[in-house]
Image (cartoon, rainbow, N blue to C red; front, side):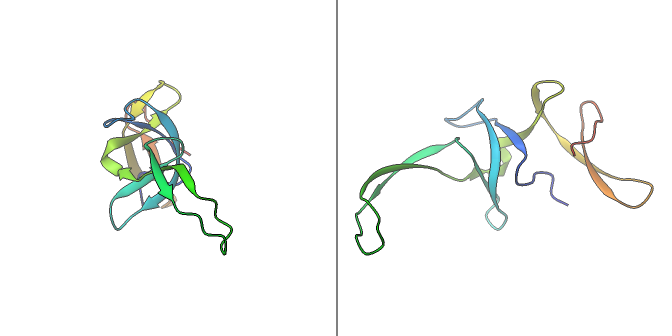
Length: 105
């Protein structure tokens, strides 16, 4: 079970986007990276391609960042938090916040 999932609200701990919050849009498991909406923006120069109906120019898009640079955001405390995994009595695995023990989902 992964500690972070797509759709989780996270806060950035390091880098140029330090302190910003956003939702995880994509996880790249093989490289250990995540893409967070509206965070770690980069500019990319794109050539026009009339056949594919692509207009040229400079576009801004989210760049992947290392998964260790983000932490899940705990709305109850308003801070970044660690995630633990525990097995319930019926054998189901659930995620919980380590600071206060509340379930994540």
